[in-house]
Amino acid sequence: MNNTFSRVWEHAVVTGGAGFVGSHLCSALLDAGTDVTCVDDLSTGRPENMSEFRDRPGFTFIRANVAEPIPVDRQPDLVLHFASPASPADYLRLPLHTLEAGSLGTRNALTLARGAGARFVLASTSEVYGDPQQHPQNERYWGNVNPVGPRSVYDEAKRFGEAFTTAEADHHGVDTAIVRLFNTYGPRMRGYDGRAVPTFVRQALAGEPLTVTGDGLQTRSLCYVDDTVRGILAVAAHGMRGPVNIGNPTEITMLELAQFVIDLTGSRSEIRFIERPTDDPAVRCPDITLARDKLQWDPVVPAEEGLRRTIEWFRAHRDS
Ligand SMILES: NC(=O)c1ccc[n+]([C@@H]2O[C@H](COP(=O)([O-])OP(=O)(O)OC[C@H]3O[C@@H](n4cnc5c(N)ncnc54)[C@H](O)[C@@H]3O)[C@@H](O)[C@H]2O)c1
Image 1 (cartoon, rainbow, N blue to C red):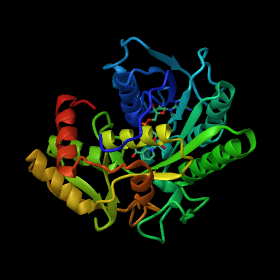
Image 2: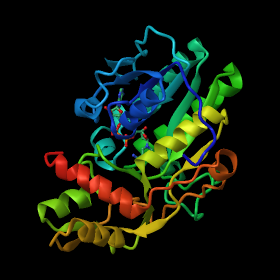
Image 3: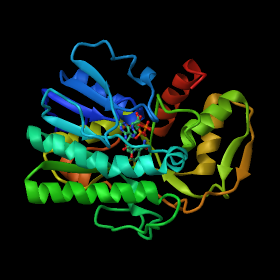
């Protein structure tokens, strides 16, 4: 641990806890002695993601859609609202569901937190910055978002969620925080979810060409999931409102990433260039000065190590 902010919670509700990031959050909270209730409709998550902790004492799973009032009968002292389709493939397939998870879902999670007097953390995203005209992006940048483009169902739902969270804090005194997560990767991602790391790893392990969009010179900054989870829990424990960027500021081009995955898997796959999606951001890199200063948080897992762990997991779960 390289941050000083941690706190033991009695009972956390994690919406979206059967998903990629949410399931790692559930594990980390259980490890810290917190009881966890996961509320998830399994629309993009998987029961297997909970298999390592499903039978642990203190863990409860409730299958429910957060667009409806959240059916939790034990009061939490922490609510982490992570339920939302997150990969472009998912939110383009589930546009209305995505808008509802970010709007009605955020309202219902806030209502739960308000009723219980719990701390509330909203999982927002770097997508609120859209195709940024400021680089790297700090929390004071307002973004460059197309409100009617194909990605708007996700970007605008998250922006609305941030506004709702802020209004609940201002007008009802709810103890809220907003974390803006940048691209996170690691075990339990789905090979077909359309995001770069799982796509490249799946393709490399299958000996298929790695599909790089455009000229591959667009950059992303990739944060290993353990670092992301530690950052989220540090924000929860600190008591800050944010928004606060949590991500890894080391930039990599998509072409470099594809080559890296080929090298680490020892694959003979080639690289194939395909069309770049509409409104795909050209650059994406967090300014994490705020998290560094206030939380003493910094990502510590190097890309090579994180990719090795991810590749190892994909090898053991070839059908993912
Ligand atoms: N992974 C990233 O790089 C990243 C980056 C930025 C933000 N985020 C945010 O983190 C959260 C988790 O992302 P992820 O990558 O783990 O995605 P994921 O798709 O793996 O997990 C999302 C989970 O939410 C559940 N869910 C979706 N809609 C729901 C609803 N209406 N009711 C109940 N459950 C619902 C899904 O079944 C799934 O288990 C999302 O809010 C996402 O916007 C993730």
